[in-house]
Image (cartoon, rainbow, N blue to C red):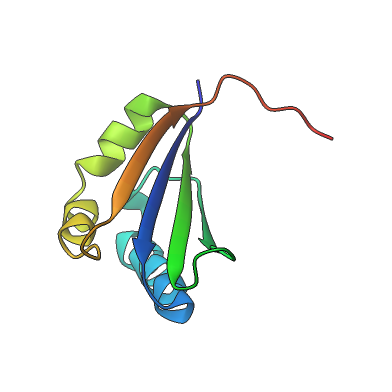
Amino acid sequence: MRFIQIMEYEQDTGEALAEVQGYAEQAGDEITVRRVTVCSDRDKPGVIVAIAEFDSWESAKVNDEQEVTQEGAENAPDGTTYRNLDVVGVVEM
């Protein structure tokens, strides 16, 4: 079952995107995340919503155990909130 983690935090959009790109470059083949979509909340200026997609919850746990991921979590902006979601279905429109 696919798994998605949503992270919400306050940060400049350019900085948020650069940090995700830097994480991907630094981690290389170590990470199991398939895609991260970085979004700016139109209703809350300065709020970033990052959507990380994994093949499964187990895959996300493997990713979480990587040193580069642990370092990134330690440096996450204060007040970052996380939502952990199992994907039960996707309907293409």
